[in-house]
Image 1 (cartoon, rainbow, N blue to C red):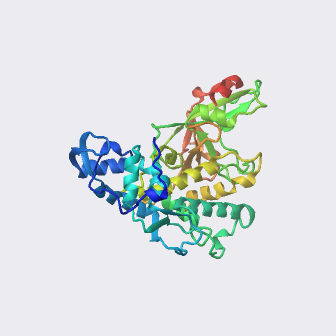
Image 2 (image 1 turned 90 degrees about the vertical axis):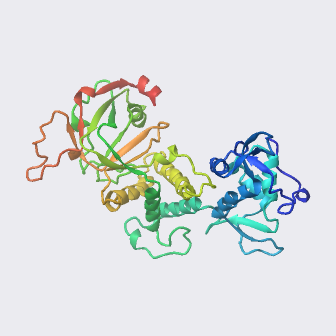
Image 3 (image 1 turned 180 degrees about the horizontal axis):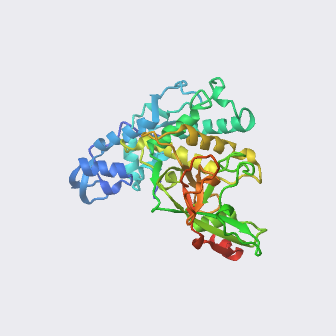
Length: 410
């Protein structure tokens, strides 16, 4: 694309724009602006491509453009003195349109981009609406990093009672970042039901060629005394880790020391409610100019970074790195409720070992698993009430593979 840049003397912003020029929907890439032209324009000859299409006056198109800009940027008079925005980066109208927002507008015609810039007020500068020098998602992620450092290095068990501080961009109390995450989860509707028919859940064990795993107990979570710290669960609190795909299981359990692996298939015995942290990666980012959906932009950007952070591989066996994700898991396990008051059964998250792989942690221990043919009348303990298992393993669906196969699959 030809550059839309002009020397400062030739910009003539705000004074030499041509608001009566017609622009058609095909000359604008952003889906929200294209929709605005289709809904509000009329058939006419576009001044930028020369074709007769549904078109609108450029001055009218500036309405949704400016509405989107003002949702993310504030303006101040351009003077020789500091306009009162501190060290925040500032933009004149031309830089804002032709540099900062060129990708958002997605306008391939440099003449059209320059004409939009020329309709901006030449006596105004713009800066990002932000407590710190970034957008809302950057502020939220900065608070998450502060919270992570706090629970890893300073206060792991009493952070709920720590006093407020003034240097946190999102929430003055450390615990408020958990409420921010909860609000974003609800806004983006990341909690959804999973039916027994929609998914099987797989869990595996790596082992040597002489070993054979066939019993359900060998695929269930360990008891509390043997439960080690893991990505979502602290030491002593067992949870069920699995995946929606066999290939993801094999990638996750891969061991250079073990030549074989066995994967078991489990079926849900009832519908469950899960927080799905893979959804932000599959959902398109709403346009800045989409008035109805742009409120989801920053939550979506933050949750992508957040989900990436809690899914990434840790350094060796350093269990300290798991503490922030363990705290979040306990928050959604014990504190969070859906709008209907329903508790969650687990969390779906990105695999750290396989692209597009989906892992799942369920809030159950060994008591939540059972073989498909097991007698449901068998009680897990002498005086304990019987609770139907959440999962049943199908012993006929065990899959044993050698390293050569699951190395490629991962």
